[in-house]
Picture 1 (cartoon, rainbow, N blue to C red):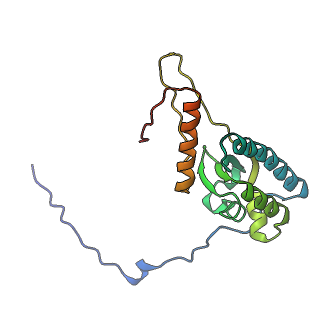
Picture 2 (picture 1 turned 45 degrees about the horizontal axis):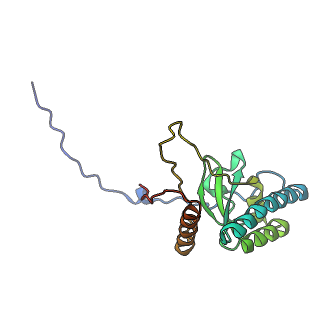
Picture 3 (picture 1 turned 90 degrees about the horizontal axis):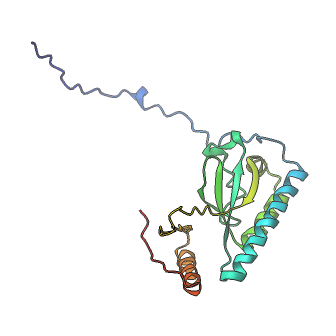
Length: 191
């Protein structure tokens, strides 16, 4: 049996190996669909429903925050199509997702007011492109699954927003509600 030698070869790069193609950031500015006044009106109506949930939360736990889902059009799932011209730190920013093309936004009273203005008054190319990527906005409903075993624990995972003070307030209020309801609970670190 012969041993074949496979020496390591060092290949020098030539100037043509360093060619960097021009990057077209953000994709085309062509809208993915027509953004009609009716579409804008439907988005604003859906935000009114989310706003009702926000007020319930404010009344119940005293925090001005809730979560909604922005569902993207099927042809708008590339990162370059993410509608950040509309959903941003001045309105309702993205902070996660719940599956393919379904992004979570952090909703506050001021954010929802600014978002409605943005939807109603955006007529720039980039703004219309951003709106055209949106299919609909819906309330977020947390999935709670109970085990068939009555003795098993119920696990509740709270959202982590990008604001540590808000996260701490949510945790504190949640724990207060559990105490008021007389629930046995323990805090568990997530993995």
